[in-house]
Length: 133
Image (spheres, rainbow, N blue to C red):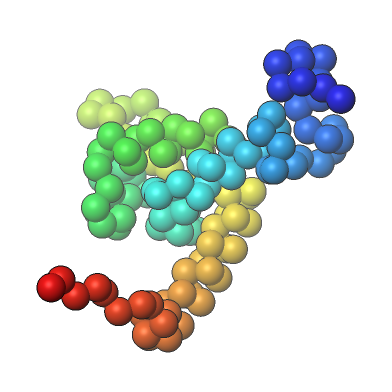
């Protein structure tokens, strides 16, 4: 058995398949980026579109410039978002999902649609807030 600090241990159980339950597997980091507070929303917002930073920020209510930039960098590093710099002055940069990013976004859209469709039942199932004396 390999210890957590053993550098000879494989990153994942098999070279072809990840294991998000293994703390050493890179799949866990990618999952954390995709499922972060803003990661999934970025992927839903991009969908099939190519958007500039400002348009993407307007589409995702409540995200700060800093968090959007950080999220885009993480998703780009994971190969899920493509950044295109047009090399113009003023700068013109836009973003779109890669093929794997679109595949994940499709699943996110299904989940979001399910939540939106079932929202009344989900809200009704919440426990009543505690009443202060």
